[in-house]
Length: 349
Image 1 (cartoon, rainbow, N blue to C red):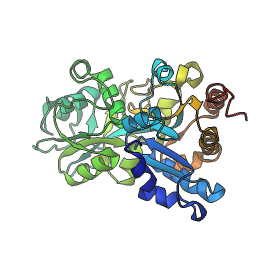
Image 2: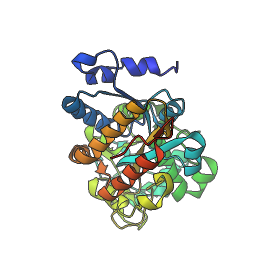
Image 3: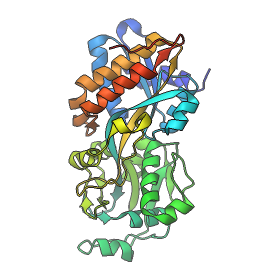
Image 4: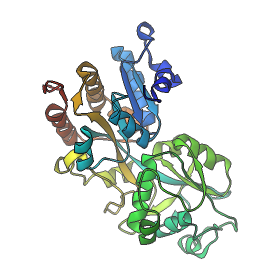
């Protein structure tokens, strides 16, 4: 048995989602990205109340979610790093987006409030490269002439686990910094030049709350829910932007899901005067050939319900819902790509 399964079936989150009459196991088991955990948790709570179908979703990071679905240890995996079409084909997987969110650089500096500090991509990369080590460095000061910056060391915080949030962050830094791209690169797990690591969005959030003069990166909803001080970030069009639903939506507006095989889209550094440069979709991964077609149908019914009725819940938690035209494409992918072992399609609606 895969090592994650005992933890998956006995987590506190799982226990909170089990019905009274089905307390021995969850109907659906998923694992992966911490990025969408708040909305999956909310959807699961409401869906269980309406249908008595329970979801056990363990937020173990995108890398863990990919491994678990490849091993057929869960009914679906979740990743903020989309797999390329060739990888999907190689591993017999199908993927589809569930919501759009964003990654946010956050700080803990006395006297500087949320949205006051301005950074650009190169400066952010140089901080994480260890080239800029103090908050009053001339590069930061040039972007913030109206802020009194402390003469203090920068405490850099990163993710230690295999993380889609890290993938989005490092993918962005690779776009805006040739030095970052050549020396560190992008991925769910990289060799960081400086700093200390926390596990999950939860662990990083805890660190930045406790460590003075720190900088970190977390998923947008974690930044809001924990009242973290986010920065303004210079976008592709040269404008300084704060992270909010409007700037996340602006980054996602030009996406043509129907033109991208496997829904492979990465939304970092998108053009647009109001676009947040660290926007991203998060994805569900499932096996194309299903050994348990009835369970696979439960998974698809859950996400079908979420697309139909979960938009307000997603918006309330500061995610951007997937647009209706993309949902139609997702339904079509379910019909044509997800089948039982005899080759019959599982989704026929």
